[in-house]
Image (cartoon, rainbow, N blue to C red; front, side, top):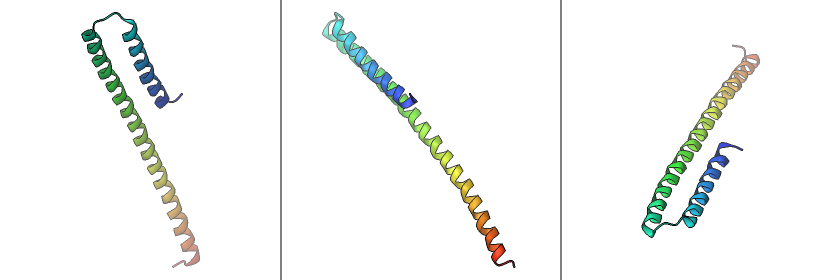
Length: 90
């Protein structure tokens, strides 16, 4: 399971668990609303953390691909230069 699926599973599990706990707990309306607000904030923070991790992963992947592309481009340029010298050795 990759990090994205794990993060999403954690968020969904937390939401389901929080909802079940609120439904089963004997609490007043005000207490329940307060708990809902706390849980909503917590889920938003976790979602932000997961989004940040996804962004970091995407950024690193893009950087790796760019480095690889530059490396392959340099190799191709050297091959073209060498072939050009073979054809027209000035």
